[in-house]
Image 1 (spheres, rainbow, N blue to C red):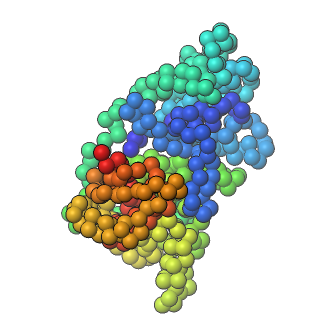
Image 2: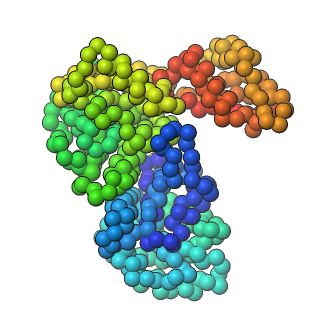
Image 3: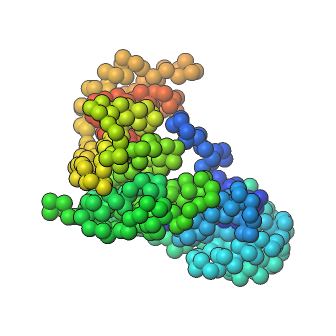
Length: 436
């Protein structure tokens, strides 16, 4: 995964979302079957000429508005600008240069980031003479584009990714890297400090104390482990959606740099929508995940409390119920080092290899007991399966009609793989290929 982050900003109705969907290759909002997480996508992984990067879409930026929704959109755009390596500033070639464009350009110049000025809705060379007025923004040469029809999007991406290095996507550091992620004020910095046995990060009960991801080295029985403590909020946001957007975007880079993501949640609050979104972000990026339920010392409990709460949390996780849970208190240091042990076990799981013979013996029986069926009535035969990669584990199923394997059967096979071989906390990838 790349560490590069690209943000799309601009005033409303200039075509930002159309450009975003064009770049990631999707026309519609992506829908997930995890309850509470279905949404229009604000961020995704993209690839151009072998260069992988994360791309963030933002709402229409209105700099001076006092409207509560526009304030939220402005905050989200500011977060994206602060975090991005490259900012794609989109303006409307049909509407021409507007005062709001000038205000946004002033903000971008102060940000001291690489800014690519995109004049959208230029669907032919005949309309390119209108580019002249956009030079007034002082952001370099404007690039004419039509996101709707895809005109010159390739040229645009050449400029955006010009400074990206293909080799940047390769991680050479052999040390285990753990990202400590989660929404603000759940105790991420407290957990890092407890593990390091020092007050390395400032800890208060106000969200937003940690401003930047900070790497720390944990010496654990002679082994060096890299801890990444992700940021909370810079300030209290006026709108809840901005908090959610902020913590998710800030977690992106740390997730992409880690081997295992430790998602910290608050025992008193339980598993909330924002927690689910952060968990999903890590799983989408094929990162192993451990969930740590912090502030366990504040819960009134009896012998069955932990089991009851774990069952409730697993129920909310649904398709992600393979993620292991641990109850801790960063304040009292209860079970904090067991977190490291659990992470190490999960890391072993994601590097595990299963022999082809064992896969075919066990999964072959499962497939025979419950063979795949197609809506067309055409017979589907799965010939054999083999593991082709690890971290994450990838299993290739060779069959006569790979395109006819539906999502329900994919889930059945994944469940059987976990039943036989566990892979606790690890996303499993299934690939279906033609037997020829």
